[in-house]
Image (cartoon, rainbow over all chains, first blue to last red; front, side, top):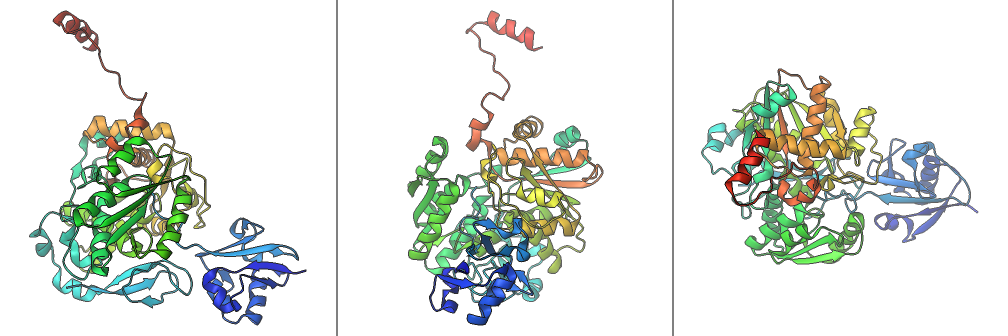
Length: 95
Length: 410
């Protein structure tokens, strides 16, 4: 068993079209670096200098990692990680 | 004409040509319009602007269009009201109300952004415009779009108040009421925007649309006699207006229309939806999303797209943020109405009440020049005041009855 990672559509080109891939337990940032070894180019789309990019949301078991331990949030086998770009839908001005 | 160089990602700086796109393909950051300030500086002088029609298009070189303005030719250039009565009530010397309660044609600042968005939609060749909205934006897209001859799709949460629905329907857009809350409507619209070749003003036209908010900032400076105020208080929903008012001030300095710029920028929110104010008060720039619960529905965005940038501007300029309860919002609306004769919607009550707190705290100096941004008309949200207004005097149609209540009044 490994960590399950859900990949958003715009990044599936880097994962051979796969919606879900598996990664190594450890920390969130470790997991992203691990994905990079199999899917080159993915890490810089999600992170910059070891930090998750501001407009990319990462959830561990549906909890936003900004409210856990951010990049250092631990992930263990069986956890589900979702990578969701925060594109304006769902955030736009509503007045 | 046309002084736009292109679009640029606010996060990673990648550049894009002018297209109906809004997100950086690489890092998912928001795209922003970049201008050729050198050439604008050469041609745009105070005198040039002063000779033009009194509309938001008098600053057209600093708006993201290629040709001449096509929509909203009478929008913008709302009064900057010197508010001496309100100033006295709040204990400050010099206070102004930027009064978008009388924006043309639908009485809110959304008429500015939609004028720019629909002009851009024409330039891109769209025949259909659309938006997701809970009120002001729906009205403005419906009205501006009618005049400009667009097909219109307006998506609203089905639970919206009847008065707001009528104020859209009268312009005969295709009004689609969705069984769901605003976030769900918005998600649906993102999917629709991907499939249909429409100009969704607050989705794929957003970089252009948002630039329209700058005109409120340009006008404030021009109407103050080409000076920036010491303080400006801006209500925050997505945070976009605050960032654009500040961008406007900086652009005027950049092109030499003002020399000095030392404005402190203050954010106003309702306590029932205050993710931006909370972050500023905590000295953080991490916006923690909230579930809105406030009478100020037009500001109820729990996960504000420009919150991060708004926090930084407030910090960078030495401003601060305040948030206010529903009761304070109602009191703010009433205070503005009885002192200045201006009936603002709930967002205006937020701004007045937040300004009051900031003045009381000494964060806004009593001898400084302050502008508060009032963004929409109270006639649209009258239900918020039900049971909170003064009472009327009900009499029989004769003099004795009048004399009797007149004695009580005086």
